[in-house]
Image (cartoon, rainbow, N blue to C red):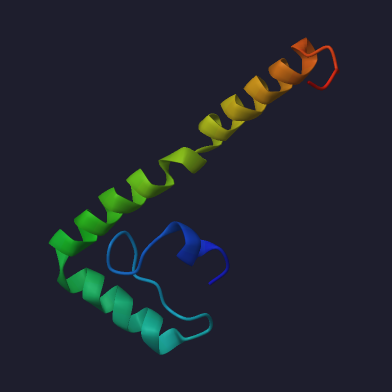
Length: 77
């Protein structure tokens, strides 16, 4: 599952399944197809949980970091 379990929580903002386990994936997808309310709740929670990793947010953070580095005189305190 890579880094996904460190970002999302099974049943809260995702349905996590083991890698290369097509049966578990099919069961999770069937669960979502049968329960639109849960599907919407998981989707909303996942968007909230991952909002800090949006490319615009990350680009802004890098730009601020580079600006800070350029404005620094290079001395350590």
